[in-house]
Length: 107
Image 1 (cartoon, one colour):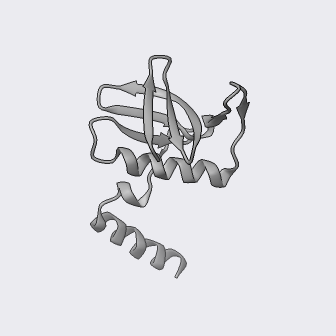
Image 2: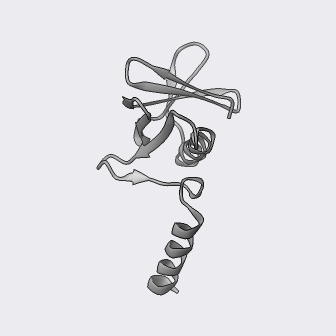
């Protein structure tokens, strides 16, 4: 993860492992809400390519980690508007409660 660039056209570009990923969403004064399914790779010749689900998750987690604690954090949402959180975005207390809940439900 090297850089996140914000654009006026309601998109961000994430430079990751020498590639550029683009997400659409909403720009706010304190960050960006990106639609997770809108990710596409932008190739050097300007064409676009659909990422695999593994690539999408990897880039989203890297962007969330990179932007954590900055004035312009990136939050990802699914198509229904539900916030997608990665461990880096969840406090240790909240993470412990979530693990306890999973154990009770599925353990």
